[in-house]
Length: 288
Image 1 (cartoon, one colour):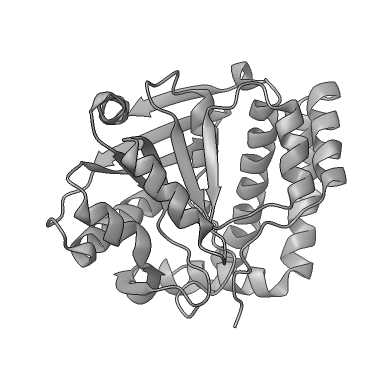
Image 2 (cartoon, rainbow, N blue to C red):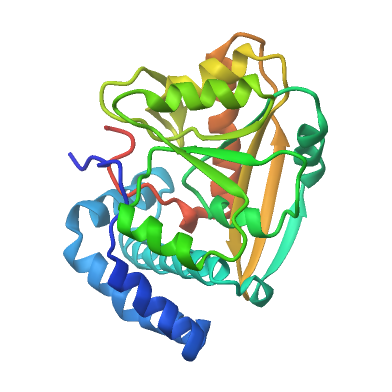
């Protein structure tokens, strides 16, 4: 079974190459390189390729040929989102356009005298949102189990134009719990990714795209117990370097984590119906 290992793949040299191409040859040249890079990963990342192929074949009911083509396109779009993140981080956000759909809900959370809860997923490219949403009265703290190598994070920090998001990485020593509680106690804004968990952590089960899957219990237990609105947020890539932010209020029963999870999976299904290529969980999600 292909399992997610809790960290991103890549090297500092790979990031340096793309940044060099972006700055000296243009973003489109970096995209052109993806034509070959995507094919490489389709061929040599067999577990990840198999997982994404099954996602299209079983959960979107695509034909065999269409599933193969969609798998390649999925790698290509994912590569574009990574290039976009690096380009925007390097100060090229003016090369992109952005559309806000429900941003007023986030702004209201930032003004409220209570903790603000956002829940996202590994679809689209939520990390780039910080460069377009403007200054809030509260900083957004993103809780993530996707820990990039320290050297990569250090390098990106050295070229970052204007960081606005603080990252809280889930750790085995549970130090992240104290940071989460601190943000909530200080009535800050915190964003969970609700679709990945690390081994040994508590999970909840809900149906997604016609089949049961496991989700981390923590984000839904915490969010359902607080007396504050919960938002589902996604930033989806569209044509011509255009990003579309979606923010929707979650409807659920107070202190009922399962009803919040069900609302979450329904919102993901709505997003994937419109953006099926932007599912970026490269492991056997439904059997993990």
